[in-house]
Image (cartoon, rainbow over all chains, first blue to last red; front, side):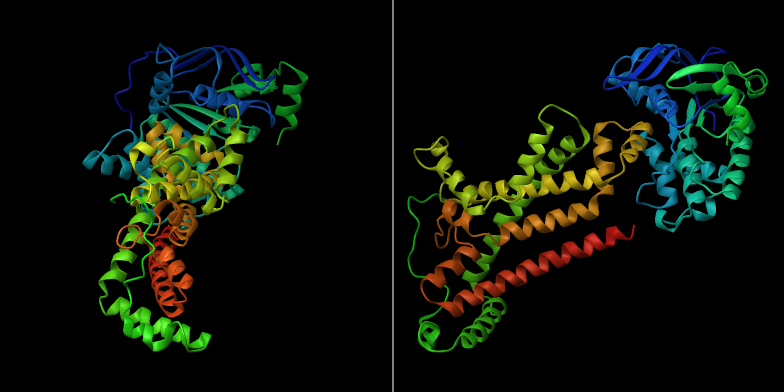
Length: 249
Length: 262
């Protein structure tokens, strides 16, 4: 699935510096520096309302932000830059938000937005459906899918576009435990196979423990701690982090 | 489309004197009028009466043109208002919602004042023309299309828009994909707007003048026959209007319900 993304070497794909997102007078996110590295599953962990989803949307070019955002070594300033960032990344949200068409049509939709047509469209769509084990559902409409199947379609749609970074915003929050476990196992396999950069937002410590190469703990829009999950769990920087990683859900 | 200076209120040419003699003005109960009207309607429709076809086609042309223009302007307007925050947004939404309920006769009055010879657009000579009638009906249908599109888009989960944008869609692609998602309620808006303008009489009468052979449509024709006491003939045109309205709405309903299952 890896495409011809610009070579950023070992440097970060996305870097945000002095990133501030406001909603009215309220500061929702205030992060001095945040980086997404190649091939890394970076989990943003924190309680509900910590600003995790806002941070994800800001890094995905979906929020107006103050501060500096760089993508693949280039500053993201204009609407055109934000569009370029969104075209080179992909996002999966808590709800699958499938279009009113078939599974195949949905997986194709991201590629069509990118202008991919013909054999390449068919090949990449099929490959993404195979990765998520949904090829047998290709002609089914969205109304005939279970929650887990719909979320797999959403992930396949994102992966088909060969994103430089895959953003996942609580992708398993509305799934039942068995479905969640099955999807988590498949995603772990896919991330390892594709060696892709992933930014995963969750409030679930078990997800963070299972998936993360690196964890950022966020609370009230501020970063309280960063490190591997083992480091954060072994040496929590604040009582809030300690409470969360030891007694979290 | 040709302009005329004054409305022509000459006697109708649709029905023959023989039918007048049959007593549409004089004898017969209300039931007679209704039965004779229905029979007459089918005779006019399926007997190939040229005048009836001309009036019916003009009605469809005026309402169809107004609907098409309202769709082209109203859906993007609804989308801009639904998806953006800007100063006076509430005022715009309230104006659109109010526009959905403005009586057609008031719209007709305002348009007539603007198109009147001494009005701001009098030099365009659009008074008593089909174009003038289309303008009046656009002003009736536009708020319905814009208002119902706006409501449909506001019903859609905001995350949908973020999902489409995150796929790398620009504004135009976002517009097309959202349009696809709201196509069922959008068809309801189209039906409501079409129903509103094909059946209204106030605006088309005031702006078009009900000129036989030029601006007479089904509703103004019905009004004229009623004024002349020709109830059976009025019923005939009424049945034609209902058949037209039902056929177009049935076709639109089929399209809408097909979309509902997708």
